[in-house]
Amino acid sequence: MKEIILIQPKAGTFDMLGARLPLGLLSIAAIPFQKGYHVTIIDQRVDNNWQQSLTVALGKNPICVGITCMTGKQILHALDAAAIVRKHSNAPLVWGGVHTTLMPEQSIENPLVDIIVLREGDITFMELVEALESNKPLNAIKGLYYKQDGEVIKNPDRDFIKNLDELPELPFDLVDVNNYASLNIEGKSLDFVTSRGCPFKCSFCYNSYFNKCTWRAFSAKETVKRLKHFVNKYQVKTIYFQDDNFFTDLKRIKEILRGIVDEKLDINWGTLGLRVDMAMRIDDELFQLMEASGCINVDIGAESGSNRILEMIDKQITVEDMLEVNRRIAQYNIIVKYTFIVGFPTETRQEMLSTVRTAIQLVKENKKAYTPTFAFTPYPGTSMYAFSIQNGFVPPKKLEEWGYFGIDSWYFNFKSWLSSKQVRELKSIEVSSLFSNKISTYKMNKPLTRLLFSLYHPIAKFRFKNHFHAFPLDSMLFRKIFIDKL
Image (cartoon, rainbow, N blue to C red; front, side, top):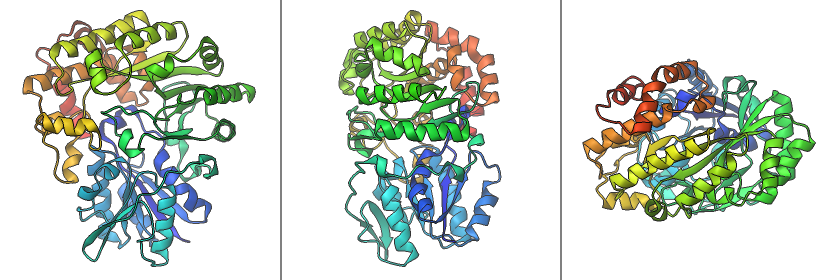
């Protein structure tokens, strides 16, 4: 049997909410699986004996070992896995995912990185596997960085897949779906993706580089067909659409939601991808269809309560827009998560306070809203990354250093425009916002996280509502006990 190993590393703080399906690896596995390759997925998040599982799998002489990773602590967990592979096998280490696409030249310098698959890897990885299996040169495979005779070689980029309907269905049987959850709702809850990319150009978002501001989608008909099969086979009660921008094409969305109703799927659903400007285009008919088809939650990137900041990050909305959208959604039985960001370069304290006040106003005007607020993270590949460097940010110099560049901790580890006092305040805002609203527990799948929430909630609510962040011992303790150990 022709063997392939794929590794899903732990992701640090993100794992506190629970493990979600490794959709990226399942996408990469789909074509090899269809062609008869035996694919083993090792998921550090759900396998407490993953080192042993990996060692056993390596004993089957795999063609290669693929590792995915985002920027942040996941890199350290990925390197741990790569070190075990190198110790027990000569299989090439193939890295993919967001970070190595954003920083390929730097990443390939690490001795535990042999090959990098850039961006969308479905076809690139399949061609790579076939070349490695037959010992053919890699120079004809688009979308690769690799090492050869001590040199780093970059092949031309690969075009994005235009017709996603042609891709095989994801091989969910390669994992135990019972190990995963998306929303803390009664019944089985799992993630599902119906599109790729985002056509917008927010200057802080990796998507503008990773997906080159493109958006491609499965057709509505194919989406409903695959969703029906997925729901029925695995008896799923709640779907979380993990698309970067689920509502890009409103006509398509209406067709999908009508399909859910017509097929009597009897599910609840939520989604990651709704922009304020897209929400402004949703008419009453579509909102009613969303409710009829089972919508219980939408996530909206509000980002800032300052119109200057919104313009600076090219968000193409205003504070007034988000308040208007919020009042409309408040009429429906839909939980809405508005994410905010504070701590941008050049942001004044008054602008930061405006963001907090806007978040509080949204909740006041919509009791089904909550507003987690995060410190800005200067991701490589974005225009805000260069702007951050101009304002004093000193980025990591090696792949392993990026492992200390977590969304919730980078400002402790790397010099930037932020003073120590500002960092403490931002951290307190971040932690208190996450625990200030009881509605948010529907996204917490781990009992320990829910217990922590119940204990800390009264303090967090007081801090966030009153903007009282003096002596933030609680957020510092939270960091030491939880974040640093994940």
